[in-house]
Length: 122
Image (cartoon, rainbow, N blue to C red; front, side):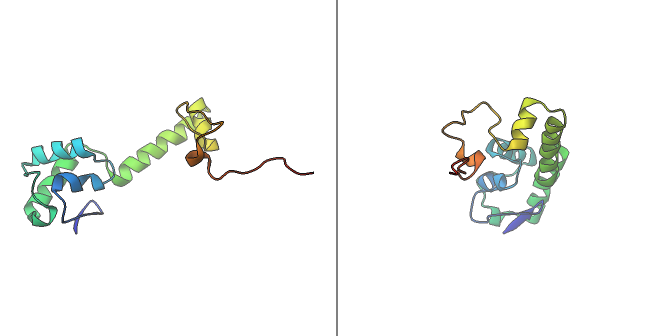
């Protein structure tokens, strides 16, 4: 497996489809990166030369694309800021509830977790 920025990307897939395995890079960003690096998007990742991998890495760094740890750190900082100023979104993040206005009376099990019964003691 090829390794870019601490992430293993699969050898058998096209490079265009395997770059999104890196956190912070989607399909459209992957296409832009390959265009700037001058790499054919149809080549399999395993067939890339070391020189082409270095080109891809330098394009990602030069374009200022936030990936992996830096992006996670920035997202975490944004959530901390929202929580510290006690805005509505920050409070929802703290309580583990949906942030973007979804209903919670029937759905939101993914965000709220397993059902807990409250107040059924005799």
